[in-house]
Length: 431
Image (cartoon, rainbow, N blue to C red; front, side):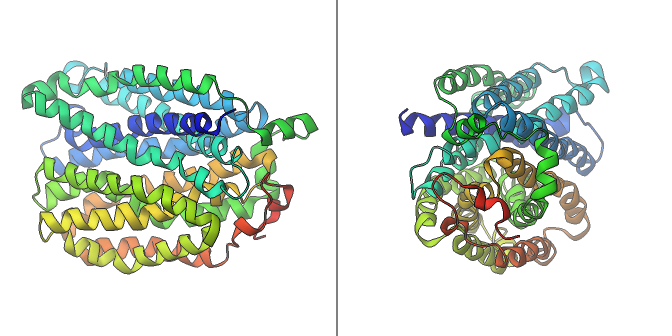
C-alpha cells in the first residue's frame, strides 16, 4: 500500500473531525451565545455557551475508552470509520437544530446532546489517526509520520473559521444569524462522505495485524492499560495539561477575548487565528521530521519552556495593536505551540505496547483535553473581574505549563528505545 494514501487517509479524517469540532467552537461565541443561550448579561450568555463547548471536551475521555476498546480489539481502520460517522452526523444535525426562540429550553438541550456526540467521536478519532500513520511509518520516520495527522488541527480550524467568515461576508447580519451560520455545519455531510471513501481503501496497520495473528489481544483494554501502564497514562495527562490550556485559549477563546475585552473586530480576531494556523502548517511537518533526529523530548521540553517564559508577554502584547496580535499568534501558536503539538502524538504512542496502544494513547490525551476544555468557563469570570490582565491570564498559563515542564524532565526519549515496529519494550518506558 502506498504510504502517501495512508498519510492522506490519516490527515483527511483528522481535518474533518477538527473542522467540525472547531466550527462549533467558533460559532459558540459568535452564534450560540445569542441564539441558544439568550441573557440580558452578555457575559452570562458567553459563559453558558462555552459550558456546552466544554461538554464536548468532557465527553472525549468516554470516546477514548469506547473507541480505544474497539481499536485495540477490532482494529484501527474499522474504528476510524465509526468516529467519522459520529462526528459528521452530529455536525449536520446541529445545522438543523431549532433555536431557543423557536422551541425554548429544548434547543440548548439538543445542542448539548449533539456536542456530546461530537466529543465522544473526537475522543476516538485522534488516537486512531495517529496510529494509522505511525504504525505504518518506515524506519526512522515515525516522528514525521506522526506529525501529519496533527496538521488536521490547523487545517480543520482554518476551514471551519473561513467557512463561517465567508458566509458572514456574503450575508447580512440578520441573514447570517437566521440561516447563514447553518451552511458550514450542513457541509459536513459532503466532507465525511469523501473521508469515508478515502479510508475505505486503506488496510489495517501492520502492528495490529501482527498483534491479532499472535492471538494476544487485550480482553478489556482499559483494564489492562490501568493495570500495567497507569503511570504512562498519568504522564500523558500531565504532559498535555500545560500546552492544552494555551491551545484552547489561542485557538478558540481568543475570539471572545480579543473582541469582547480588547475591542478588536471579529474579522481581526479571525485573521489573527488564521495567521497562527497558517504558520502551523509549515512548523508541524518540519518539527516532526526533526524529532526523528534530535528527539521528541528535546523539542517538547524546549517548546514548553518558551511557552512558560512568554506567557505574560503574550497577554501583554496582544492588546497593544493589531500588528502585535498577529505577530504573537504566529510565534506563540504557529511556531512554539505547534512544535510541542507536532511531537505529541508520536511521543505519547511510544509510551504504550501495541495491545493497549489505542486505549492508552487516547485516554491520556483526552482526559487532559477534558480538563483544559473548561478553561473558557474559568477565563470568562476572570476577565469580568480583572479585565484582560497579562499577569492574571499569563500566570494561569504558567501554572499549567510548570506541571508539564516538570514531568517532561522525567520522560525518556522513546525515539532511541523502541524498534521500528514498536516492540513490547515500550511497555514500561519511564516506569
